[in-house]
Image (tube, rainbow, N blue to C red; front, side, top):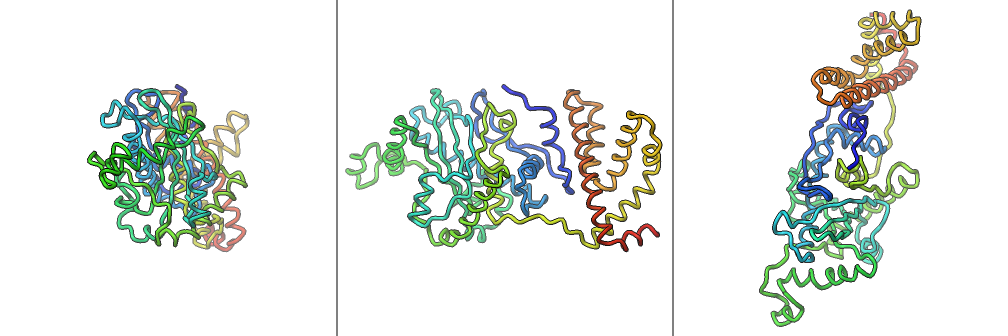
Length: 422
């Protein structure tokens, strides 16, 4: 099985250069069995990993750092709800059943397809005026008998239901989605895909087997004789209605705006498009569908981040430079008087670290923590990668801060003059 690059692992646990608030780095194990393993489950990304992924893809929009724990909780709840729906299908379609852990299917791989409308979603929207999904995924499961089955998943958002939710901003992983769940505004349409001639069985399952199972009927004749109801156990599966209710109708316009944004982002090559995950993807194999929650967290129109500098910001920047001039005199002198490339490189690093504690306190703290942890690290390669990456993050943060300071000084020269005259 491929191993993840130590630098990638290190970067995932460190703050971004522009981040100002520390985020949790602890990860949570899902209940979704992982294909190709014996007893392992998929692991969800931490709030810090999630934030890093959104920042890397340019999809932060107006998402705030303090929102990330809620975003991750919604993401995990949504995925667990999706898997629950798949298990309900498998209990009906899979001869081996899913009552016992050892006979459950496993999630082999997944593919995020936010720019692709499934045939069912296309029909519901253009013929029945149903809102568009904010995301689409294809999950491929591995049954106990070795058979692979692809499931198509459309995610919908009900704006009206979101306004009525109480305490759903930080849902429990098993809180449930849709009607009867903790997060009523998130709805999922799950069904087995129809792939070629072999997909005829899935067509029969969707058109006949599941409808009968929901009525407790063993056969069509059983349902006819029983007046539409059988005597067997009924499936818990509840499909989403084809027609939108009044609440969903009010979300139609917003869903179209979100869809337009998704298509525009794809056209601008900002990272929105098919995202495959599975055993063959070293990075994706350590997380489960960042894109699902990224879409869930950005179901409103993306806003453009501005670099406007207020007078209060300029004052803070000026104060930090005043502290640097006072506290980093030795580092500054070493940089001014270095004579060799090696000496100047060390002096530059020293100045970056010293200035960083005032310019970028969060990134500076991460570097100091990485250095402290290295003393007792069992994996020297990983410890070294984390230190080097933490320094790179600090360096980038300092560089960005310096550029912002130049703009602040041009815009508010009087503020800097006042601070430096103290």
